[in-house]
Length: 433
Image 1: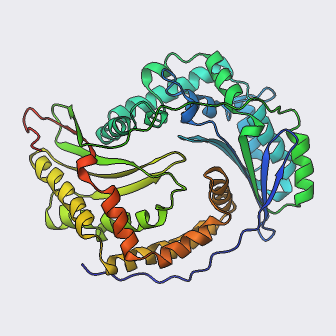
Image 2: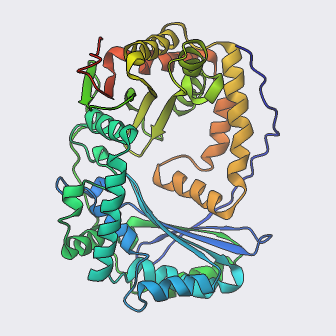
Image 3: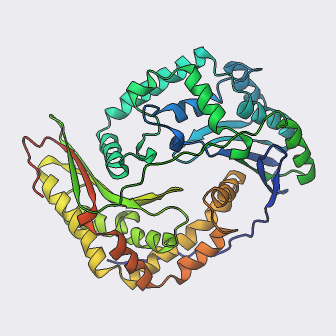
């Protein structure tokens, strides 16, 4: 295998963030960038899927999506028109750990943008008509996803490795639950988690900080703090043995395969060596071990890859491919064998050089826009990372010894502790493991 590492200047900026707390408990992180007359406002709340109880799968996403569909003073149509009139962009998002509301606008329109952001975040209408519209759209999306066999395997895999923990929940929820969610549940979820003392607002762009602070105090003065939710989570299962789940599906020609285990949270000290190891294992596209073994040498698939996902409480280390039914068994064994080979022998110094070069070359690209920088400072705040953590991590990437990378391979790549989920027509092609 030949590597030609790209070269890129390593120029990461220092990001001097001013941190303030409003009287209602809202944390504000301000970073001025006067050269570009745009301001990004990103509000994150600790109100993601983690706050969903059993029987509420989809409530977090539905609640968050309705924030941009009307307030007490503006209908959904009026809100969209007002955002468009500013040439601004309004977005809402919900994931496992957090919900967010983001608005970017020209600096000259900052006052109007702040008014809209505060209204969306603190005065949602949750109109019954909009709830039904969003419910219908969500159910349609869920039906489309169920027709996606790769998605179905991924959902079963996540449920398998996380057991009863809310991280098991699909972002859009479960159809039978979404169909039954009532407006009072949406309002209750909002009132439980969408509190100023449960939120962080990042402001990045061309603005005057003292004036911004006064404007925020005025705009968010009616948003009252409250008792923070204290969810008690079931334990995340510790992987102790191999678990195999098969999903029988007739009349399919491709078998999606996914395998892996629960891994580390975002603030774990193994973050850098694990990312480097994964890059060589299956995260670098055609240069990776898995792609070489299964596609280039074996002809078993168009693509095989691995990934590392890291959230606030835990993460996922996985590998996946899709193959023809006659090749299913060979592909499963090839995935397992190649992962075990990395575990036993480690990656090479040449592969480590390539991985280092990739990460040191790509990280500066994350500092190009206000939204990107806002995301970095919010990640730092909400995942409990050190100040300007990206400077530390890039140094860790540059200096991480091969022994640490291969220690992570030995620690996390024990396939006898993997969960394996496969969808296929097993009546015609039995699984042989």
